[in-house]
Image (cartoon, rainbow, N blue to C red; front, side, top):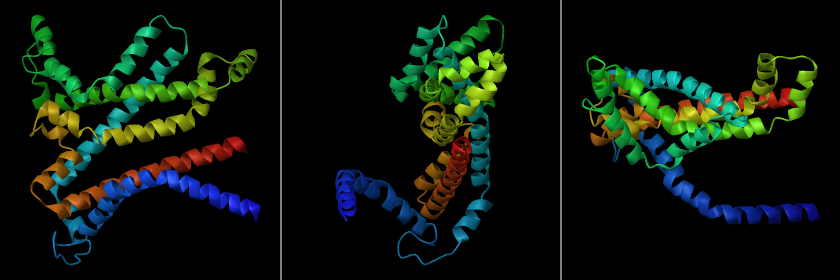
Length: 291
């Protein structure tokens, strides 16, 4: 009885402190999303009737939506593995006493503290038609490249995405590396294990929970590159940069709320599915390690 009273009191205290955040989250996120789901099944913004899955059928039949999905998946499929590998390599270097350790620490922290608008100005100077990179190419006798109006545009945005988000991933990987006991590596040295075997059998295994979280955050961040793309490439970017954010922005400007909310629901559902799969993998790994 006393335990039940203590638990109820503790729960009430926790809810009391969580109430402001829960109310704010409900007002600005949960309730609007619920209304968006409702609108996606209606045929009009006001006084609309239930339309079933008609909006979703029109959405998947739309050429612009399919192009946005393909570009987004391609961007995510390229950028996430790249940022995962690069951030892990840098984290391993920072975890050891390398010569450029202090320089690397400054380099990966800088994108986290510099405002996005300032970052975009730098990249515009680099990749503009009359920018720094074209000036360097021209000095070597190489023709100028219209970076943001050609197939190179996707590569530019991938580089910007990696540079902007790599610092956070490095911090997460560093925390995971420092939580691996040195006893495991010392035991492996006694048994004659080489660097590759220690990396695959110890480092990667015990970094799996951290890796899953890093993959999850990288995927979510890859769906949020509209701001950088918009500031660098403008209102009408190259076709390779036309992603889901552009599609939903265009639907918002045209006040086509049915397609906008349907696209938002599909995007949220896809991310939720990925999150569920990744957390299921992490849970199975924890059960395996505990067993």
